[in-house]
Amino acid sequence: MTKKQIISLSQSKYIFILLLNINIISVFGQSIFLKPTIGIASLPLDSDSICMIPVYTGNYQTSGLQSGDTIADFTFYTPAGNPVHIQAELAEGKPILLVAGNYTCPVYRDKMPVLNYIYNTYPNDIKIFIVNVVEAHPINGPSPYSGSVWVTSQNQQQGVLYEQPKTYGQRKTLVNTMLSNMTILPTVLLDGPCNNWWEYFGPAPNNAYLIKPNGVVYTKHAWFHKSPDNMICDIDSLLGIPCNSSPASGSFVFNLDTDSFASALAGTVIEIHSTLTNNSSSAAEIEIKRLQNNIPSGWETAMCADVCLQPWVNAFSFQIPANSSQPFTMYFYTDNNEDTASTRIQYLNKYDPSNKIIQNYFASTLISSVSLNEHIPLQFLIYPNPFYDELIIDFEGINKESLIIKDIYGKSLYSAKLNPGKNNLDLSFLNAGIYFYEFNKDNNTHKKGKIIKR
Image (tube, rainbow, N blue to C red):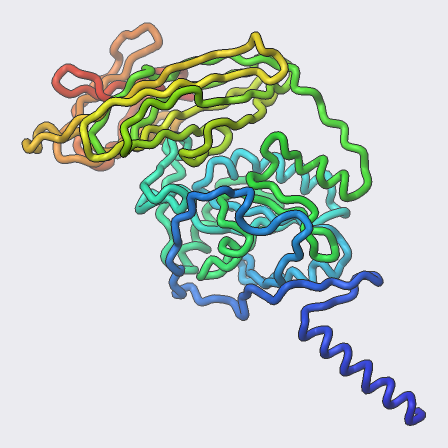
C-alpha cells in the first residue's frame, strides 16, 4: 500500500468516525442527518421511577414536530427488553410510522384495527412502531390532558381501569396487560422513565408521524388517522401509489342515552351521553359545532366523540363507518359553587345539510350538606359493559346507594342497596338484552344509564 493510499484510508476512517458522532448514516446513497438523541442509553430497571408528568392542555397539532422536520435519534425497548434504535431502522431504507399509544386511551384502542390493517397491507414497504406513553385516563390521579380525574365512560364500560404507572416496571406490566387483551400486530416500545418520546414528539395521547427514510417527517397526525387525515392515503402518497378513498355518503340518526339534564355535587364532572348511528352502507362525515355555551365563569364544557377534546375546541368533524355507531359525551367541568349551565350542540352531515340535529344539554350542581347522610357519591364505575353474568359497580361515598335495574319497558327487574366500594352483582338470571339502571336517593334519581347483557 502506498503512502498516499494510507493517508487516504486514515482520512476515510476519520470521516467515518466523525459521521457517526453527528448521527449520520448513508442509506443507499442517501444520508440520514438525525437530530441529537433523546435517549435512552440503556435498558431501564423495573424500579426506575417515572418522572413527573406535566399537564398539557394545548393543541396536539402544534405540539411536537411538524412536516419537514428532522426527527431526533432514539433507542427504546420492547416489553421483552429488546432495543430498537431508530437510526438503524431507517438505515434499512424504508419509511417508518410512529404512533403514540396507551391502554387507557379509548381513541387509541378504537384505531387499532386500522393500525393492524396498515401492518398487513404494507408488510414489505414500511415499518411500524407503537410507542407506549403516559396513560391518558388513569383512575388514581389527574389526566395529563385535563389536570383532573377523567375516567371515560368507554373505559368504565370496557373495564379498562388502571392507575398511572409510577415505575418503569409498572409501565411494562400494563403494556403486557394491554398486549394480552388486545390484538396488536406492530412492535410496541416503552417510552423512557422520563417520558422522553412523549415530551419530544408530543405531548399527545395518540399522535402519529410518518417518517421518510432520510429521517424527515413526511406527515403528522394530531390524532392518528382521524378524518380528514388519512394515514393509508398518506402512505400511498409517500410510496407513489394512487389512493382511492370511498365517498362519505351515509347518514346518521341521533339518540339521547340519558336525560338531557344531569345534576351532581359541586366540584365534580357531569356527563351526559348520546349516540350517533349510521345505518347506511357508506361512511357518514359528521361536523359537530358548539353553538352556545351558557356556563358560570368557573365552569368549562368539553365534547367527546371519536376523540375527547379540550374545552376550548368548539368544532370538529369525524367519520362514522358504515353500519356503525359513535358515542358522544358532553362534559361539564364544575366549580365548588352551586349553579346551573347549558350548552347547545349541532350535529351536521357534511354532505347532506338536511341531516342535522340540534341538542341542548343542561347541568346543575348542589352544595354538599354538612350532614354526611346527604352525600352523593363522586363517581360510579360500572363495568364491564356489555357484561355476561356479573356486573361490577364501584363508587365512592359513605352511605349505601339504592340501585334499580329495569327492562326497556320500564319494568323493575332488580333492586339492591349497595355499599360504598366494589359491588359484584350476579345478574345471570337476566336474559341477553338492553337494560337501564337508576341510582336513587330520597326518591330522586341522580344517576342513570344503559347496560347490555350478552
